[in-house]
Length: 379
Image (cartoon, rainbow, N blue to C red; front, side, top):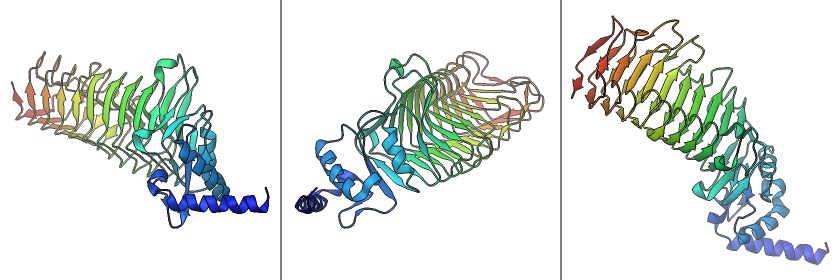
């Protein structure tokens, strides 16, 4: 490239910087200084053509901090940007097709433009894939993205949107739209006990298994999410402790439970959690809220309708009892069987001040000899 050509390219690029509205790039772009430190921008193959032209000019100055995808294996450009360090990587409007995981490290923030940014599993992929993996990392954030598992065009494979593996403390998964996954929407599988995990403001629907499947987190928050059409549970927890599950909405069909508190292995408890302010409709598998291997949980202020059971208390492994749970101030309507059912593996629970209407079976069944039931209103 000749000297005059280089000068012309620099002039054109500077003009683009001056006249381009910052909204095209997003929050990481400043008209006065260009691309902000600690950030990178990725463009989809079908981003607006004017943006692609600008991206090619910007790449002269910023190198791998500007990624331009081609619609095939787009995780390559995204991972390149993430590997630069503790970066906020912003995906611009468009469709991104990946055939391997996007891998995030500690301090990484991956975000998009909301509904305008969609990450896809290609048709006929038919293999296992976690779309975003956060492995042994802390302070990571995934926000404002759409994840499309393209379930109708897959015949096999375990496929989920976001996978947290091992230490995941201070992770945030917020304001994403997760849909058409063959397996789970969000899957948390850890060998230690991470804390301060926030999963909030997400829309999760058309999921083959659990909307959110969480194992062994503490002092965390699952709030203000919307679930519909989950093959099994809306929220499935194992060994979750000291955490809050609140203000979520579950809409029919939910194939298992709306919210499940348990330990699959029967070796411990989900305990000291608060489940409050949730609206659960049409959980047809077990119950609106299913407690197995759960103790010292507070289940309060939830509205549960048209489920097989409203609240079900048991200890599935039969090794001990689900005990010292408080079930209070819930409104439970239209249960196929009982609104509140405690079998012989529940005991020492307090069931009080609930409103129960239109149950298909005995409204409240208590089997534990030391469980207290009073002040409930049954119609």
